[in-house]
Image (tube, rainbow, N blue to C red; front, side):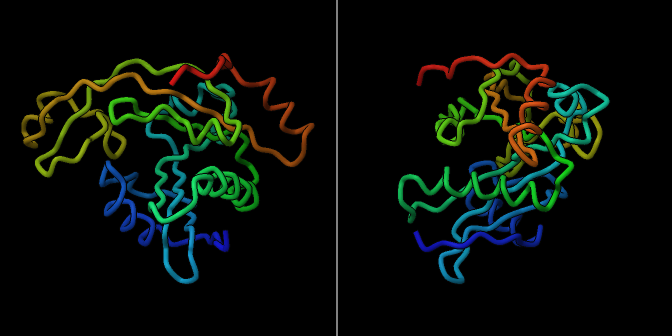
Amino acid sequence: MNYTIKRILTKQAKEYIHKYHYSHGSHNAPSPCYGLFDDDELIGVCMFATPIGESVRECLFGKENKEGVIELHRFHILDVTPRNAESWFISRALNNLHLDKPKIKGVISFADPTVGHVGTIYRATNALYCGRTSKKLCYIDKTGRLRHPRQNGKDITKEMAKELGWTSTRRESKYRYIWIIGDNKADKRYWRKKLKLEVLQYPKE
């Protein structure tokens, strides 16, 4: 593969994700964002962001270390790449993340079985599997976009959703994956021991 990975502006990343990702939406202020380029053509985006819920940040290493946690929030790559391009891109995006944000020690991401995802590409990068989340009540807005029950730091009630013209939908529990990143093997071992989630065997496809 003769691809390059560059950090890109939030605006460019959001435009790509809104166009190609099944959610057609993203966190309001994701950062950092990385683009996969074939020459000058953007063919993929890996977007990191602060998790919406405080409990997500705290579940890895505890409340006192929540600032060291970030979410791999959106990931997409065009179907013009070889089969291993996804894992290749994620691995290098994580390396770039460590260089750009050295205080980050844990990265969490979720695979949504409602849309047929189980985290296959995460397994290819040796991500730790840490079980499934609880089922969640979400909303579909007037454009058909899936909306998280927490928006802009506020919980959206059923009454608020009704006023907005959103309809409720019950989402399946998601698969939860973790990457531990650090300066060296000793640093990674330290944060691996701090991990509060139980590491399990990968679920069957």
